[in-house]
Length: 352
Image (cartoon, rainbow, N blue to C red; front, side):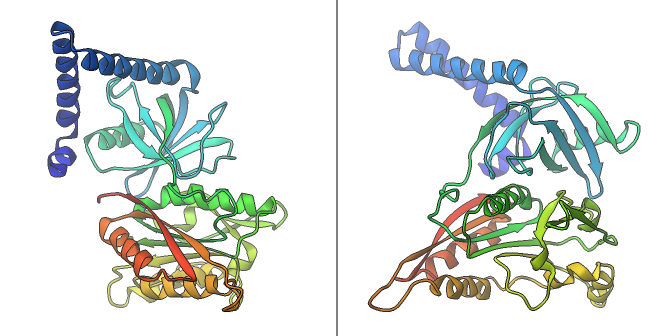
């Protein structure tokens, strides 16, 4: 069924809407109370969502075409509130006022703009990409509608339960992890204690551009500009603490970028194209997830105490990306958990 839904989503979606309307009509004809109540709640939900989109949230967005068929959408935040890892439904009336599509938020909740990154994967995203690409320059301003936020991390990572967090993302699945990672950094700056936050990102793209580092807030943070990342996936402003870029250190926040599927002789070319300052977090291979989990387990076990004064530690594992990668992280979360350390698992799956 998922293959039909993926290939023929618009037909699949509209067919279900038609079925719901028919059920509601038949419920009215036969005075089926539960069907009528369900239909009323559905109409109320649709009405509230449309009201929020048309009258409550900002409607003007800046759309920017990035290499690798990626579109960045930036909307001024206004009175919109959300948490890292959530998503919104977006509609571009210039394309169709009836099509709403969900996309993960890639910006931090404290940022001035709400941003999402859309990769071309279907008819609607392709039409949007072409519409923006045909405009003058790399960016264009247009009216959009959005409503939400929805979803979120199923683990409570915003309190003191987790001081060890492992984030594993693949491809465009990095977008919700960016939002979460930057939010956690801001919490750390406000005094929240962490012992290890490991952000791991795997991509297949081979094209790298030369990098430039921007100092932010008096060298407090180093911001990786969009020009520094692989062309197909360029989420902007992944914030790195300065000690992350110093070899030989064991920082609390650790970021690693794994470039996979490099051809023979290509690794050195890619490595040479990267600014030496960020080479410590670049990997030219597939990640060894088993080893990464065990290192995180060892780090977490440092705080479990002695046999007679043992403390149980919980590690949050957040994943978003291809199903194979997500399934492996889920299995490792179960197999590597023991009496001292437990890996609590949250997943989101993007099909490529």
